[in-house]
Image (cartoon, rainbow, N blue to C red):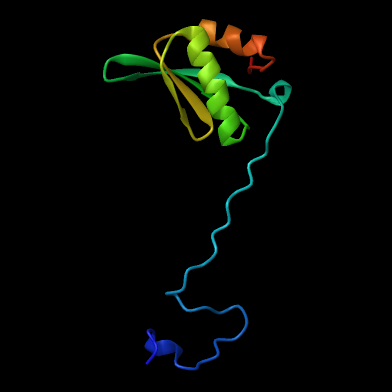
Amino acid sequence: MKENLFEMGADLGDGWEADNKQKARKQPQKEIKPPEKHRLYLAKEKRRGKVVTIVKPFHLDKKSMQALLKSLKKRLGTGGTVKEDSLEFQGDIGQTLQESLEAMTYRFRV
């Protein structure tokens, strides 16, 4: 006996599938851009009474984002993390962060 009683030899035809089957999920293709093509902006948020500086959107793959984060954390002497297409840093370090990224040829919105 088959697991799904509704598929007992039934041909569902073209384009039709049973609801219980796993569909292939398409991963959205992320466009990777060189640093000169980025148009970043800074944002500050207060979380639990502390300031977090956010820089986004980055168009890099995950390994490049991790490497960039590591070098910036070391240069700025602060903690941080990668969240989807953004980098989050502890503290109010907007000006020094922008200077460091501009030295790496990243561009910011005016």
